[in-house]
Image (cartoon, one colour):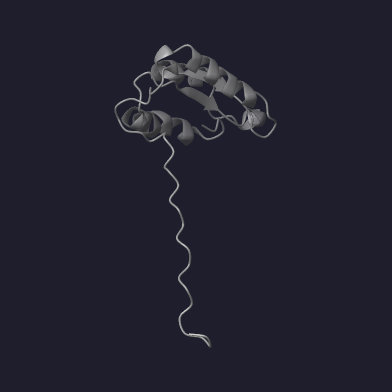
Length: 123
């Protein structure tokens, strides 16, 4: 969410959290709540404490970052990876779960060669 726009924060619990629960393919899904644009502190509309509280309610890790300055961006991925490593069921082969194989890549479909030209001087 954007820490300078409250509606992006509100949408997390009203919309996005429900979508994650509905479509996640593993009940042990690891989630991280990321507040972005902390470089714009004077425009902040959502406090860090509110973010921490919502993360607790949603059962996820919390971090704030700035994509513009790069502050904590890498740490977001490190924290997420560390959380995943703490959940053995996510490390097992075939841990996608029962809702489908949405994370498996589709096999490439070969492209058919173009049809030969019709007509022309040599037809």
